[in-house]
Every structure is written in C-alpha cells, then in structure tokens.
Image (tube, rainbow, N blue to C red; front, side, top):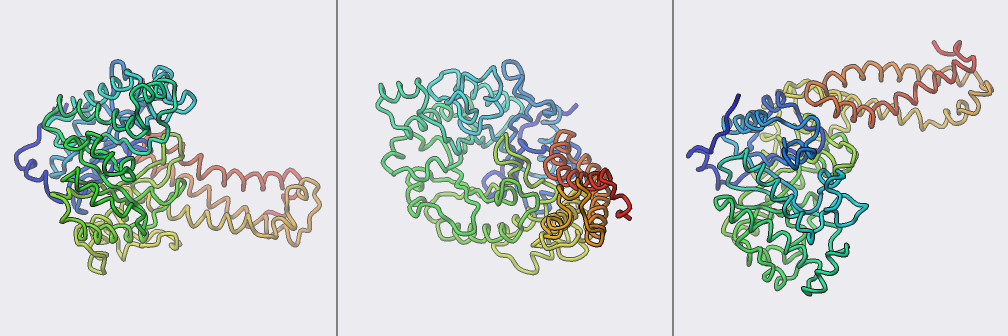
Length: 485
C-alpha cells in the first residue's frame, strides 16, 4: 500500500517555474491507473511540469458524499499512486474541484437535488442555499485530505449559466441589493475564504470566463483580489478576449495562468484531434504572453486542457491516447516558443514514430507506425476515421437511393445489374467493420474501464455497423442472397 507524501524541497523549487500542466479530464473515459503508470512518465518526456486533475466523480468521496463517486472511482491507494508517479517524474499536482457550475456529477443525484439553482437543470448549484457551500467545502476537504503539501487548488467556477433564478436567490438579491455578478462573486469569495483560512499554504485558482467581461470597478469591489489566481482560457486560433482584460486583471491579480487545449475543444463529438488547429492556438498564446507579461508579477504558466466530454451528460469526444501526438506538439511549442521541423522531428522521435507524426490525421489512410502508450487506440481511431469516410461515401451514394432503397428491397423490385455491386460493396464494408470491432474493443479495454469502451462503441461504432448489417439482412429476407458474393 502506498502512503501519501508531502512535496520534497526539490519539488518545492519547481513550484514557481513557467508551468506546463497536462489537464486530465476524468469526467470522460478516465484511464486505468495501469495506463497512467505508462503515460505520466511520457508527459515528463514531452515537457510537462505538472498535472491539473479534474477528478469529478472519479475521486473516492466518502461519508455524506459517497454516492457522488462513480462505480469505477479511483481508490485512495490509486490516488496515492498517481501522486507517487508525479513525484517520481518531478511533476506537481493541482486538483480541480468544481464549486459552482458544471456540477452535474453531484446534482444529478436525488440526494443533492435540493442544491440546484433550477430544479429541472442539474448544471449549477444555488449559491443562496447554505447546504451548497457546505457540500463544496466537504468535497474540498476530502480532496485536500489525500493531497498533502499542495501549493495550488483549482475551484473551477466557469460557465455558470444559471444564477439568480430560484426564489431564494431572487429574495437574497432583492434584500441585499445584489446583481447576478455580485451573487456569483459572493459564493466564490466564500469558497476562496474557506480555502485561505483552513489551508493557508494553498493558493486557489479559478477559470476567468465569469470575470473577463466584468467592469473594473465591479471587479475591484468583488473581494477576489488576494484570494485567487485566474486562469485565462481560450482555445480558438483567433482570440476573442476583451481587449482590456490584461490591463483590468493586472490591477487585481499579480499572478495569472493561461489555459490552452490539446484536445476536446473543436467539436463536442470529434474523435480525432486536429493538431494543426492546436498548434495555431498555442502560437497565438506564445505571442500574447510575450506581449502582456510585463503587466504581471508572474505568469505562472499554462494548463494545456484535454476535455473528454463537453459536460457530464455529453458523449465522449477525443480520447487521451489518440491525442498524445497533439499534446507532445503543444507542450513543445510552449517550451520552444515556435513550431518548426526540428520540433516536429523531436516529438515524433519521443513517440517513436518511424516517420513524422501526421499533423492532419484526418487525411491519413491509416496510422503510421509508432510505439507510445496507447498507440493501438491511436491506430484504431485513424482506421475508424478512414472506414467511416467509406461508410459515408457509400450511404450517400445516389445509386443506393435510386436502385436499392428500403422500399425497393422489401418489394424485391430491383435491377440485379445495379443492386448486385451495391450489396457486395455493403458486405465488404461490413466485414471491415467486423474486423475493426475486435481490435477497437481490445485496444480501448487496455486503457479504459468497460463503461467507457461500451459507451464509445455504442455511440460511434455500432450504429454504422448495424445499419450495414440491416441492409444485408433485408436483402437476404427479400430473396436477394444470390446477389451477394
């Protein structure tokens, strides 16, 4: 059994460098600990300095919070093992516990339904219900208990879309003459003060999006200065941040963070990562950091986010193993401040590609040979992308509708000269789906728990396979078996 450890003096010396944190979004396809044992050392080789771990329901909550933990939640021993791996690789850990919005993993449970701001919506908690703050602080305490010696702790607090709506909040806003912004600040300040008083050696971090459009006088009155370091996030290649954000934030927050992305930011149902897009995002960040750094005492560094689903109820998007080439490139761009052939060669070598890793995987007919932890998932995702393209081409071929639509097949009113080749094309594609099915289920199961494998296959893979199978079965039931070779 592993025991918890405080940070060593050597690790404390790493605390204030220009960080490159790898974000582990565990609300979607959380990796097995056995996979983390392989991939955390790779993060270090690729240039990471720490982990931003968004546990969500993968933390082993207990007591009054026990039902928040998922069936595959990491054990205490697993949490200690992850920290041990981080320490062995000189990586800091910053836990992230949502404290306001994105609270579905708690509010979906009947026990916590009363904490909702909107009874039918499980996204945001009610800041005027005293039990809300109690629940958040209880979660913070349990996470802190298993993470001794932390320097930073992230409270989330992004995208709070429902606030000031319930009767409690409306009454409070009226009595205390509060705006929705002030109501937001009041709850965040309560959470941050709790951390400051109970854990004085820990500095809190929060996402910036609920602050960025706030006027300076309102921000100055919020009481957040001295309590938190904002993490300014933006994932686009053309920045749309308010032009005054840096001047405004520098008046309250001497230290800030940036948030970029290496996956999960270009579409809620994307399963391949557009590396070129993320390169552009990071190059813009590098340029912006150079331009704005003199306004702050310290730019702590970056959290390179890797979203696994857009919210607790969304489908899985890009899986971690297939996005490791993107992560390697993005970390190197932040480290070197540029993207060039040498950088491309270096990351390709670390990930053991026999040639350059593809920057545009969508154009690949198959995965180039490589050998990094999870490379089988990477290979199978690229192969599925190619197979899916063939599926879409066939299903949208006008010949299918013209000579082999479902109505014609059921009536056996078909022209064999056209239908024969079409049915054989469907049968050939179906066989390719059958072959890939076994590979995909095997490669996914090596990295993820069965629930994630089942979800990905049922969302992305099986609907297309079943459609092809239905076409063949309908043809056979209509007496067209002789047309299938």
